[in-house]
Image 1 (cartoon, rainbow, N blue to C red):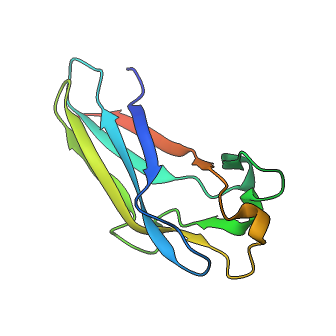
Image 2: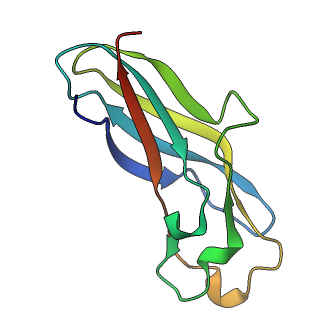
Length: 117
């Protein structure tokens, strides 16, 4: 079984100090059979990076373990593509330095797939 394919991971809208925003991404089931697909935003520090040194530590990410709206968990048909929005998944710290205001952040998404429903 092939893993789910993740693409177009992005923060929805502007992210200002102290504010939260949605994390959006697309999932594809590349398998020829239906799978139960699961996707969560990773929360360990190695999975949030920034194009500016030291800025990644100011972005916090929820993994969805306490909110049913913060992850994708559903059966996907063979070849199905879905768009996912994770409300409030990312928050920029209130004490973020000015040097990080224009930083670009990358958040990796963890996926899993199991056969059937």
